[in-house]
Image 1 (spheres, one colour):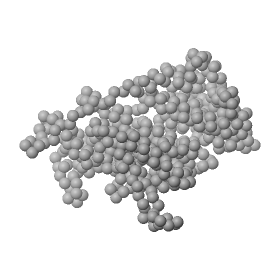
Image 2: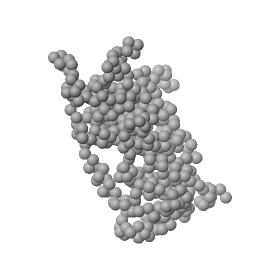
Image 3: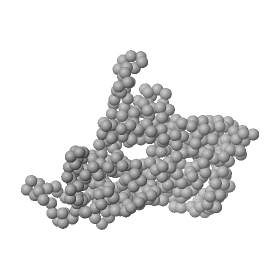
Image 4: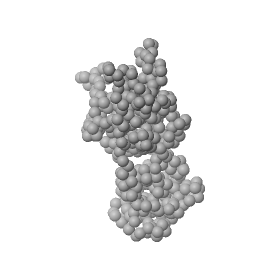
Length: 444
């Protein structure tokens, strides 16, 4: 009997250990989802590879994507429909106080006229931020869009994995992990409910049993029994009292059950019950094999609302007033008077670049402004500002530009999630802002 006929004969598409590591740690190279045999090109692996491979660069080295390439990746058959999604993304960009023209550029590629005649097909050059907004405004019922939304959500919150030299790690806190995964669970439970409905689970009583079967498979207990075992009140929402590891196990249960229901076109209420139970059971078996700890033995923690309050209570950074630039009457700066720091430009320049960024509106700055501002914060070594005749700029300005051009380096602050490259400049992330608060503590 094939796995499609017998719910006890299937296996999970990846180990729980791998999935948990990928989801909770969110390594830059490990933001992956479960393989999907029906749509191999729409898996997270395939989508990420295809997305990164479709990136283009202008002559100035600015990264962008064509809208029509994104249309195919997101599985939109008609360009007109996808244009509506881009229009929503433009609105979201504007409402976020960003200049949409910096992220969405209308173009007409030199590909000749449309086959039907008329002007060349319209397209858009999209920044990475524009791609993110487009994904978030797309139809989440499309699996490539749903996967892209998860990918971008994880990318915006990806934690530090490995930093070398003198970089200071700022790992994702337990509060951040819990709140993020809990919110993802809320969203994906909707997708699970939709898949269960498609299998025939339609009444409230049926859905309650369906959900209970998943918990029984994972915990070996019903929801009331889980509450009693963990010492929780009868009215407690058990998901709100889970730590990040337990939440991730349940996220894996939910996403894998949805995938199996859809992929195998499961039909019938009892078949849906069996599917949810078996997925939960196999996640449980994986946990016991890997760590030896059953999910019911993971301790209950405080309500998640307390974690949310703590995260909201993080104060904004105190702004540093930059030292005044020399005037015509004061052409020589006294470095000692302004306490300018002498730093290793190749190892530490990014820290002061972040410091300047977080003080700007939307934490953004152009590359040229950053080059002009940095000498107000650090001491530039002798000779570094001298122009290179062959390149047309200075050694110092080239080092600043390398902060973006070397973004794929393991120690680069963009690769590590402290900042993002935007057209003609940089934007600090929330993680970068937190780094500034910690690294410059006592000095700001």
